Image (cartoon, rainbow, N blue to C red; front, top):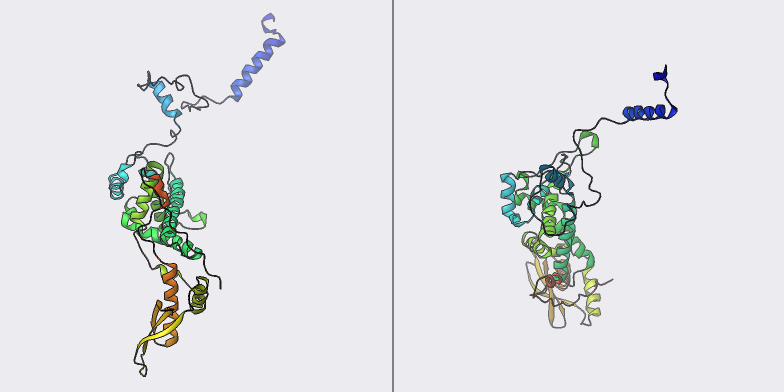
Length: 334
């Protein structure tokens, strides 16, 4: 009986041990290191760069790295060829190559996607395209300038670039699941890779390298900017513009014609401000030719190009001085 009697303190301790056994889960064979604050070894500032003293120390160092949750992937030959075509083999961080070609829809544990590079690259592209067009065409109306930037950076344009780059051979993505209610567009996914390329160059090599890439692969493509200048009453608009510039009122004059009495006449009309011809147009009627001549005069004014101009981002190049161009006039309000 004496062996069965226990004090309340002993019984309480026994009860705590029993509850701890019931509540605590079994210890996992795989442990994770949460790097809350640097340890004494990590806080060393004596320039030590040698190998860890033990395998356990090496494992702890690897797990403590911020990028430890992402696994290092082997780069396939196709991605290497893709990188060489675009000059990406000069990136100091070669892990960016697999991130560039991996869309967020490619859900794999430990695999980084191009989502962040896509957003960064898109903004960088818009900045350089806007800088170039605004400097080259200082008189371009604001709405026309915004539309031109959209055309250069829109998905259809970037898709064509992706096709030339060979993105289809290296792209990693999956279609949306049926329960998602929509399917991803292959065009959109390919465009994200082009933006990610620019973002990777910008983050790894800096602003000038990214600008050179955008100029070489995007701004080297030209389209007819004059198609963006839509004016319903060019004659009235041109008259107001000439008045604001302090010049003589524009006058239309017939320069040449042929087949006036036939079924297919052609008239050539010039618009003059004083003795200077500022526009020219043709048409099957005098009114059509005059309208085109007035629009031609407006196009020449608003799309006047600057020659041998510098860009504001030139200040990032050592030893180069940026000379500001003349600020363009605002658009006429009729």
